[in-house]
Image (cartoon, rainbow, N blue to C red; front, side):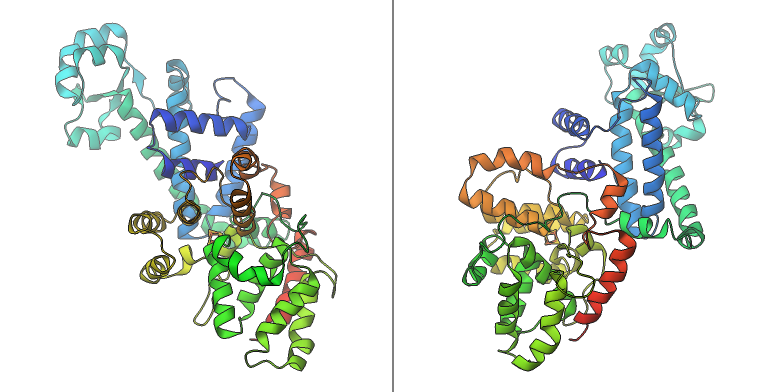
Length: 456
Ligand code: SF4
């Protein structure tokens, strides 16, 4: 849900009619109980509360996560608050102990002149249409200071459109304090082995298809990879492919990220062995060393060695949130991990028009890395609207191929695949970008695999 809120907040003007319509329809599609208060659905509210508190635990862990979470929660609350009827809004304000009372029609008529002249942007007609709330001065300091409200007997008379700002400010302060408090209690929570894997994975969990089962296994020829890397690879994989071709080598982070991606697009084990070997022996690794060290790790990632776990390709969240690249590494997400100037140069090199580069850099500045990648997709495929929400490099590849080979039919399918998120927490943990078995086993297995890849 919060990903959708983020996506729409960047693509539309918040609060505009198209934004509200689109958000409403997306929330319905995800079966999010955003009208639970209106429908008096206790069970739905309970579920919503529980998931909110689980996310608090997962998203209190770093400044970046906290900021992202706060922003999306604010936007979601603003939307939900404005969707309430007058009486439910009053009920909500009472419930959260914000004792703002809507003034009666009689009082409003009596004060109509004062309200009109003291509230910027209001005409007499608008005063008649608007609800006004009586708010203690302490809660309306900003409005009072900016001379945006009528004051009488120690109360500010605040129009509805300004009330949501007060409610949101109040919520922001409370949520941000709560996140800081939760972060402080994390060490004790993390020592609980039932919660620890959940918390570690949730903030970068991926809940879409896992791309481990491929219909096109064996349908890609090694000779096609160079061309595909230009046409259909997301920037992260294009960068890895280029580095591999240039240096005839990738360090272990890059081999993991790129190797599993290639597996996901359909390379068989035999092809993967041939692909990596051909490239590595052009560099400093001889065939014998490759067979003894690297070949094992490739078979391992295909589930043919060790515990025979079938590893799944990494999702965007995993790439963005974990294992940042250091000097000499090419893995990671270029929108997240590249210096903006270098990113700009790379985009220029790939013939992205200057206006497109500006848009991408703006999104990167706002920390909307996946949206920046979506923009890159639109610009490199010459489409106005990507039509799906990007969560996975393999999804990028699949959608690109579908677009390049079909066009129209794609849009329909994109709608489904782009929103195939499931809200089941357990499921989201299990489908998280690493092995498809349980998480505890997954972590142990991954460590095993990483160990085989550690040789630089
Ligand atoms: Fe790769 Fe995802 Fe970053 Fe795009 S957003 S470059 S697909 S990690």
